[in-house]
Length: 70
Image (cartoon, rainbow, N blue to C red; front, side, top):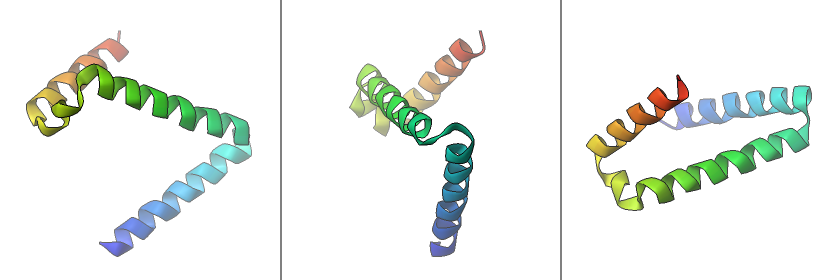
């Protein structure tokens, strides 16, 4: 299990390096910031108690995917 965690960390670090090299650190920082705000907004919109409900999570994910494909 530790090997996979290390492998994930290594792959993540490589992709971060490639992203920063191509687009710059400020764009990376803004992407992380925007992703965080979107995640927090989704949590508040869906409700924190919904994290325990697999059915709600699947239903909410399907509705978001439908919205994104329009």
